[in-house]
Length: 257
Image (tube, rainbow, N blue to C red):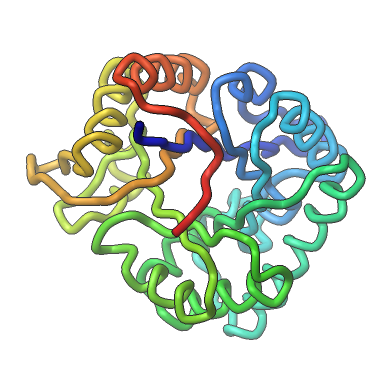
Protein backbone atom coordinates (compact mmCIF):
# COMPACT_ATOMS: atom_id res chain seq x y z
CA UNK A 1 0.00 0.00 0.00
CA UNK A 2 1.20 3.50 -0.79
CA UNK A 3 2.25 5.66 2.14
CA UNK A 4 1.98 9.42 2.38
CA UNK A 5 2.94 11.94 5.06
CA UNK A 6 0.61 14.72 6.18
CA UNK A 7 2.54 17.65 7.64
CA UNK A 8 1.57 20.99 9.13
CA UNK A 9 3.45 24.18 9.99
CA UNK A 10 3.05 24.58 13.75
CA UNK A 11 4.38 26.30 16.86
CA UNK A 12 3.84 29.72 15.31
CA UNK A 13 2.41 31.46 18.37
CA UNK A 14 4.58 34.05 20.10
CA UNK A 15 4.24 35.24 23.69
CA UNK A 16 0.62 36.29 24.22
CA UNK A 17 -0.17 36.01 20.50
CA UNK A 18 -1.87 32.77 19.48
CA UNK A 19 -1.62 31.60 15.87
CA UNK A 20 -3.02 28.35 14.58
CA UNK A 21 -4.99 25.55 16.24
CA UNK A 22 -2.09 23.26 17.06
CA UNK A 23 -3.75 21.26 19.84
CA UNK A 24 -6.57 20.21 17.51
CA UNK A 25 -4.60 19.82 14.28
CA UNK A 26 -1.87 17.61 15.72
CA UNK A 27 -4.28 14.69 16.19
CA UNK A 28 -4.61 14.27 12.43
CA UNK A 29 -1.08 14.83 11.06
CA UNK A 30 2.03 12.64 10.93
CA UNK A 31 4.76 15.33 10.81
CA UNK A 32 5.04 18.80 12.37
CA UNK A 33 7.22 21.61 11.01
CA UNK A 34 7.94 23.66 14.13
CA UNK A 35 8.89 27.33 14.04
CA UNK A 36 12.27 28.03 15.61
CA UNK A 37 11.75 31.52 17.04
CA UNK A 38 12.80 33.72 14.12
CA UNK A 39 9.72 34.07 11.94
CA UNK A 40 7.45 32.83 14.74
CA UNK A 41 7.52 30.83 17.94
CA UNK A 42 9.46 31.25 21.16
CA UNK A 43 11.14 28.86 23.62
CA UNK A 44 7.92 28.14 25.53
CA UNK A 45 5.98 27.51 22.34
CA UNK A 46 8.74 25.30 20.93
CA UNK A 47 8.82 23.24 24.12
CA UNK A 48 5.04 22.89 24.25
CA UNK A 49 4.71 21.96 20.57
CA UNK A 50 7.37 19.26 20.72
CA UNK A 51 5.72 17.81 23.82
CA UNK A 52 2.43 17.58 21.90
CA UNK A 53 4.17 15.96 18.94
CA UNK A 54 5.73 13.30 21.17
CA UNK A 55 2.40 12.63 22.89
CA UNK A 56 0.68 12.15 19.51
CA UNK A 57 3.50 10.14 17.88
CA UNK A 58 4.09 12.87 15.29
CA UNK A 59 7.47 13.32 13.57
CA UNK A 60 9.27 16.54 14.52
CA UNK A 61 10.87 18.85 11.97
CA UNK A 62 12.51 22.27 12.13
CA UNK A 63 10.91 25.14 10.22
CA UNK A 64 13.66 27.79 10.01
CA UNK A 65 13.00 31.15 8.38
CA UNK A 66 14.35 34.64 7.97
CA UNK A 67 14.72 36.77 11.16
CA UNK A 68 11.41 38.52 10.50
CA UNK A 69 8.86 38.25 13.32
CA UNK A 70 6.93 41.31 12.16
CA UNK A 71 6.55 39.98 8.62
CA UNK A 72 6.06 36.35 9.71
CA UNK A 73 9.05 35.39 7.57
CA UNK A 74 7.13 36.03 4.35
CA UNK A 75 9.21 39.01 3.22
CA UNK A 76 12.36 38.61 1.16
CA UNK A 77 15.61 39.57 2.86
CA UNK A 78 18.91 40.37 1.16
CA UNK A 79 21.11 37.91 3.06
CA UNK A 80 24.41 36.40 1.98
CA UNK A 81 24.70 32.60 1.66
CA UNK A 82 26.93 32.56 4.73
CA UNK A 83 24.33 34.46 6.75
CA UNK A 84 21.59 32.06 5.64
CA UNK A 85 23.75 29.06 6.43
CA UNK A 86 24.39 30.19 10.00
CA UNK A 87 20.82 31.38 10.53
CA UNK A 88 19.59 27.89 9.66
CA UNK A 89 22.22 26.16 11.80
CA UNK A 90 21.20 28.35 14.75
CA UNK A 91 17.51 27.55 14.40
CA UNK A 92 17.98 23.82 13.88
CA UNK A 93 20.21 23.70 16.93
CA UNK A 94 17.60 25.43 19.10
CA UNK A 95 14.85 23.01 18.14
CA UNK A 96 17.19 20.03 18.39
CA UNK A 97 17.90 20.92 22.03
CA UNK A 98 14.19 20.82 22.86
CA UNK A 99 13.93 17.47 21.09
CA UNK A 100 16.65 16.11 23.37
CA UNK A 101 14.81 17.42 26.42
CA UNK A 102 11.71 15.50 25.36
CA UNK A 103 13.52 12.31 24.41
CA UNK A 104 12.80 12.49 20.70
CA UNK A 105 14.85 13.17 17.60
CA UNK A 106 14.63 15.81 14.94
CA UNK A 107 13.63 14.12 11.68
CA UNK A 108 13.48 16.79 8.98
CA UNK A 109 14.08 20.43 8.05
CA UNK A 110 11.71 22.49 5.93
CA UNK A 111 12.54 26.14 5.18
CA UNK A 112 9.74 28.59 5.93
CA UNK A 113 7.98 31.19 3.82
CA UNK A 114 10.19 33.52 1.82
CA UNK A 115 13.28 31.43 2.59
CA UNK A 116 11.56 28.36 1.11
CA UNK A 117 10.38 30.16 -2.03
CA UNK A 118 13.77 31.81 -2.54
CA UNK A 119 15.46 28.42 -2.25
CA UNK A 120 13.10 27.12 -4.95
CA UNK A 121 14.36 29.75 -7.39
CA UNK A 122 17.89 30.51 -6.20
CA UNK A 123 20.49 27.74 -6.18
CA UNK A 124 22.84 29.70 -3.91
CA UNK A 125 20.16 30.01 -1.23
CA UNK A 126 19.12 26.37 -1.63
CA UNK A 127 22.73 25.29 -1.26
CA UNK A 128 23.23 27.43 1.86
CA UNK A 129 20.19 25.86 3.50
CA UNK A 130 21.17 22.31 2.50
CA UNK A 131 24.75 22.78 3.69
CA UNK A 132 23.46 24.05 7.02
CA UNK A 133 21.24 21.00 7.41
CA UNK A 134 23.92 18.44 6.57
CA UNK A 135 26.48 20.19 8.80
CA UNK A 136 24.20 19.74 11.82
CA UNK A 137 23.06 16.20 11.07
CA UNK A 138 23.45 14.37 7.74
CA UNK A 139 20.59 12.04 8.69
CA UNK A 140 18.04 14.87 8.59
CA UNK A 141 15.52 14.89 5.73
CA UNK A 142 15.54 17.97 3.50
CA UNK A 143 12.03 19.01 2.42
CA UNK A 144 11.79 20.36 -1.14
CA UNK A 145 8.95 21.50 -3.35
CA UNK A 146 7.57 18.61 -5.40
CA UNK A 147 7.56 18.87 -9.18
CA UNK A 148 9.67 20.63 -11.76
CA UNK A 149 9.94 23.88 -9.78
CA UNK A 150 11.58 21.99 -6.92
CA UNK A 151 14.34 20.46 -9.03
CA UNK A 152 16.95 22.95 -7.83
CA UNK A 153 16.29 22.21 -4.15
CA UNK A 154 16.23 18.48 -4.86
CA UNK A 155 19.51 18.52 -6.82
CA UNK A 156 21.29 20.57 -4.17
CA UNK A 157 20.01 18.34 -1.37
CA UNK A 158 21.14 15.20 -3.16
CA UNK A 159 24.52 16.77 -3.97
CA UNK A 160 25.30 17.10 -0.27
CA UNK A 161 23.96 13.54 0.30
CA UNK A 162 20.76 14.47 2.14
CA UNK A 163 17.57 12.47 1.87
CA UNK A 164 14.94 14.63 0.16
CA UNK A 165 11.17 14.56 0.73
CA UNK A 166 9.01 16.04 -2.04
CA UNK A 167 6.25 18.29 -0.72
CA UNK A 168 2.94 19.46 -2.21
CA UNK A 169 0.35 21.87 -0.84
CA UNK A 170 -3.34 20.91 -1.17
CA UNK A 171 -4.48 24.18 0.42
CA UNK A 172 -2.48 26.43 -1.89
CA UNK A 173 -3.19 27.43 -5.49
CA UNK A 174 -0.52 26.55 -8.08
CA UNK A 175 0.66 28.40 -11.17
CA UNK A 176 0.93 26.63 -14.53
CA UNK A 177 4.71 26.51 -13.99
CA UNK A 178 4.24 24.46 -10.81
CA UNK A 179 5.01 27.17 -8.30
CA UNK A 180 2.78 28.37 -5.46
CA UNK A 181 0.48 31.24 -6.31
CA UNK A 182 1.50 34.47 -4.54
CA UNK A 183 -0.42 35.07 -1.33
CA UNK A 184 -0.99 38.61 -2.56
CA UNK A 185 -3.41 37.28 -5.18
CA UNK A 186 -7.00 36.26 -4.42
CA UNK A 187 -7.60 32.54 -4.08
CA UNK A 188 -3.97 31.74 -3.21
CA UNK A 189 -5.07 29.98 -0.02
CA UNK A 190 -7.86 27.43 -0.42
CA UNK A 191 -10.14 27.06 2.61
CA UNK A 192 -12.97 24.73 1.56
CA UNK A 193 -12.31 21.23 3.05
CA UNK A 194 -13.96 19.30 0.21
CA UNK A 195 -11.90 21.03 -2.45
CA UNK A 196 -8.67 20.66 -0.49
CA UNK A 197 -9.23 16.95 0.20
CA UNK A 198 -9.95 16.36 -3.50
CA UNK A 199 -6.68 18.10 -4.39
CA UNK A 200 -4.83 16.04 -1.77
CA UNK A 201 -6.16 12.79 -3.25
CA UNK A 202 -5.11 13.82 -6.76
CA UNK A 203 -1.65 14.71 -5.50
CA UNK A 204 -1.23 11.46 -3.57
CA UNK A 205 -2.75 9.03 -6.08
CA UNK A 206 -2.20 10.64 -9.49
CA UNK A 207 0.86 12.80 -8.81
CA UNK A 208 -0.83 15.89 -10.23
CA UNK A 209 -2.38 19.21 -9.26
CA UNK A 210 -4.72 21.42 -11.28
CA UNK A 211 -3.19 24.90 -11.69
CA UNK A 212 -5.17 28.13 -11.60
CA UNK A 213 -5.47 28.14 -15.41
CA UNK A 214 -6.62 24.52 -15.57
CA UNK A 215 -3.20 23.09 -16.50
CA UNK A 216 -2.37 19.67 -15.04
CA UNK A 217 0.98 19.94 -13.29
CA UNK A 218 2.96 16.78 -12.54
CA UNK A 219 4.48 16.33 -9.10
CA UNK A 220 5.66 13.32 -7.14
CA UNK A 221 4.59 14.22 -3.63
CA UNK A 222 5.75 12.20 -0.62
CA UNK A 223 4.37 14.64 1.93
CA UNK A 224 1.35 16.95 1.87
CA UNK A 225 1.30 20.21 3.82
CA UNK A 226 -1.62 22.07 5.33
CA UNK A 227 -0.84 25.47 6.85
CA UNK A 228 -1.62 25.75 10.55
CA UNK A 229 -2.58 29.43 10.26
CA UNK A 230 -5.31 28.61 7.73
CA UNK A 231 -8.64 29.38 9.52
CA UNK A 232 -9.98 26.03 8.29
CA UNK A 233 -6.90 24.04 9.32
CA UNK A 234 -8.65 21.57 11.64
CA UNK A 235 -11.42 20.75 9.17
CA UNK A 236 -8.88 20.52 6.36
CA UNK A 237 -6.50 18.05 8.00
CA UNK A 238 -9.34 15.90 9.34
CA UNK A 239 -11.05 15.75 5.95
CA UNK A 240 -7.78 15.08 4.11
CA UNK A 241 -6.83 12.27 6.48
CA UNK A 242 -10.23 10.64 6.24
CA UNK A 243 -10.19 10.87 2.44
CA UNK A 244 -6.68 9.45 2.11
CA UNK A 245 -7.35 6.54 4.45
CA UNK A 246 -10.68 5.80 2.74
CA UNK A 247 -8.71 5.36 -0.50
CA UNK A 248 -6.35 2.89 1.13
CA UNK A 249 -3.34 5.14 1.65
CA UNK A 250 -1.27 4.67 4.81
CA UNK A 251 -0.28 7.86 6.67
CA UNK A 252 3.22 7.78 8.12
CA UNK A 253 5.96 10.33 8.96
CA UNK A 254 8.13 11.30 6.00
CA UNK A 255 11.18 9.20 5.17
CA UNK A 256 12.69 10.94 2.14
CA UNK A 257 14.38 9.29 -0.82
